Length: 133
Image (cartoon, rainbow, N blue to C red; front, side):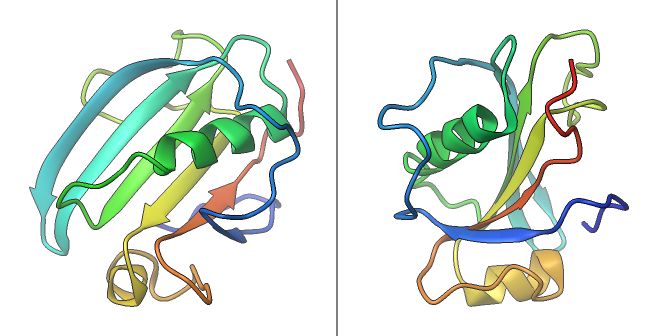
């Protein structure tokens, strides 16, 4: 689950401060869940045309607040368009990708413990796009 980018992996709790008071309006696309070796994993793409990194991170945090099912990991990608969408698979190109993990064990299972937090669930964020359009 590690990606080769220069962006730092940011651990953010669901109660972390947001750069915007209200989350940006996004459209949920390409959503699914499946059983894998480590447990139930989900993925979703949030379509947010013109999204900046800050807006993408806010959208990821907003979506993650509503995760309450049995999945122990969710990949949440913010995309600006659907050109790189692959049905049933994560987007190829994204503004930010958040990896939401339910608890410390899920972090160990899905990220080799690289997502850390004092409270759970938590999100590891990767934003390689640097706001370029």
